Length: 130
Image (cartoon, rainbow, N blue to C red; front, top):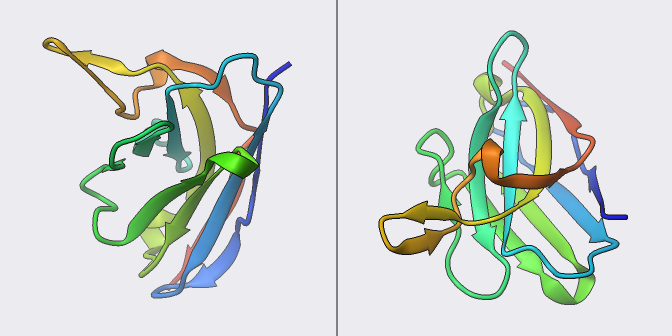
């Protein structure tokens, strides 16, 4: 049984930093992509970014580009989301997800697309105060 367990959420003032972790277990076959999503109260779930598991560079949503960094430690089956220069609008529940790549013309790309998610974590709250 696949499990994704997030940790590292909390409360921080604007301009601060947090690092989220997502530890995976129970895979028979490793996913090709690991993504982070977030959902703020009253809003739809938003893709934050995705990292390929084997090779390749992460992809980020425009709203977090330059402030958030996704990394992986394959030996630990863990993916991280380093969040810097946090803003109040970053307040949300953050979810990690194991997903299949997205078909873009003839390429298979890792992009945060909820419809391609096979497994979700339980979520961790991030609150940024002004």
